[in-house]
Image 1 (cartoon, one colour):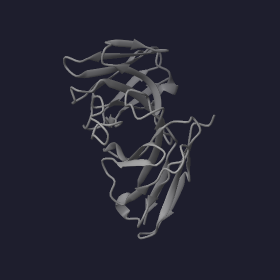
Image 2 (cartoon, chains in turn blue, yellow):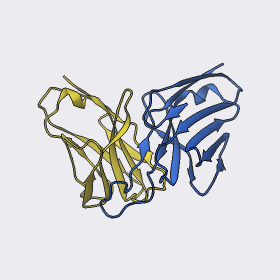
Image 3 (cartoon, helix red, strand yellow):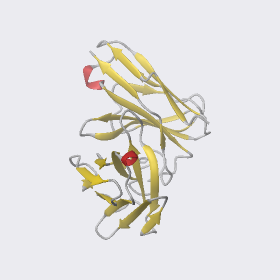
Amino acid sequence: GESVGLHLPTLSVQEGDNSIINCAYSNSASDYFIWYKQESGKGPQFIIDIRSNMDKRQGQRVTVLLNKTVKHLSLQIAATQPGDSAVYFCAENGGPPTGAGGTSYGKLTFGQGTILTVHP
Amino acid sequence: NAGVTQTPKFQVLKTGQSMTLQCAQDMNHEYMSWYRQDPGMGLRLIHYSVGAGITDQGEVPNGYNVSRSTTEDFPLRLLSAAPSQTSVYFCASRVSGISNQPQHFGDGTRLSIL
């Protein structure tokens, strides 16, 4: 699975299968996490987010799971479709702002992404 | 509501030339930021702004300048383009500087420096 800062992995699935994309984050102070989808030639598109006071959050066909104990985040896509083929990124916020001009103020750290390919 | 709009979509420059990448958002967001995306490196923060008149450096600010004279616009200037600045540049915005909110991205500017 993906890790913030490591080599880009790939995942191939058949249409209709469920997909699970993983992300390991490094900063235990992070209290907010986001998943983005990026299609070829486009900018990252927000999918779903989760705060650290939650373990699970569901959207339309997507679920994000957060395991703070092992610093692991996953994105589950139900009934994957060819239109889901894209690069998926996780991002963490590094914790609450450390003050005006603080190094973590307003900043997200992005993973390098996982390439999801859905075969018809 | 167009979201985040970036222009141009593509640009080729010669080493030493200068140019400005434009970014505009119509969501009245306080926070705006610029990233560059390189193969195997993920998105790296160049500069960001938490409101009009306020900017700060990100992870890779060298060779770039920004200004924020209005809430809507956040241009990125390359002062003297170098081949190392060949990349895809993304502008993003969110409601405020508080980091537990999603950022919304433009579709990018693909920049090549020869």
